[in-house]
Length: 303
Image (cartoon, rainbow, N blue to C red; front, side):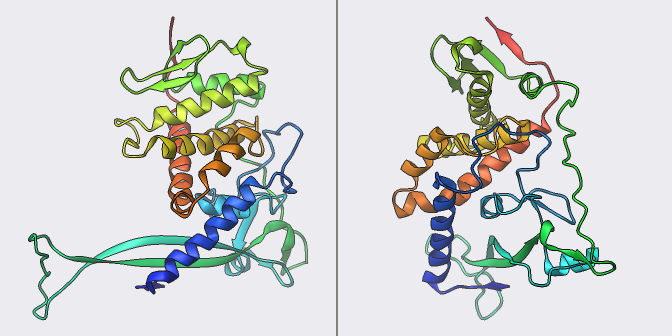
């Protein structure tokens, strides 16, 4: 439904959802946290049963860890697929979209403000859906369970190890990576990523987690996704979340690490920062998609 909300309605709703998101992501005792290594064949990011596409933004985190299959759909969607959700518990997901329409005068012409600019009013398309997980549905035909399809690992080479896949993934992006001693950074002026030697890290997973963080920064360059308008703190939050999601896709991480949580906890203090979690999650997903969609060339290693 599209509506012009009560000034406090939209703000209060987003604030409540933001509270829930931050609480869930930073809950160190959450049941979905794992202390064992990730499995590249396990689906960690929730997908829609019909489109087979991943949920993005805040809906990723709303559904994260609430299902072993990580496959979801609305009641109507499951019905179209031939399955019943009777007696199953649902989870609510949200879609917010701002819309601008011109302000018209009595003659149907667009009104102008005091500076001569056309006047517009912002409304919001707000939708919410109740979705159900695949393990709770049963066939109308014979009562059988929904057959869980294998995870799409087309972005990985199943003939090599997860760590080898990480190397291949980042090499194929073509970023200029230089040896930087003890520091890690992305330098916009030269479009270079600086990384210590992999042997300076506790393990290869840590190295590639940091490399993912710097590649998310790299994705935000003006000639790529152009996130230059973000503040330093906002960009760091995007990089933290994006690095985590990248490592999930590569099969070397299944839940946020302590440093991810610490940053998000410090960031989420205060109403203004807390509300920016929505745009940060969206930008993080866009950054990950950019890395996945640009597996084209060999990385240039500069001494």
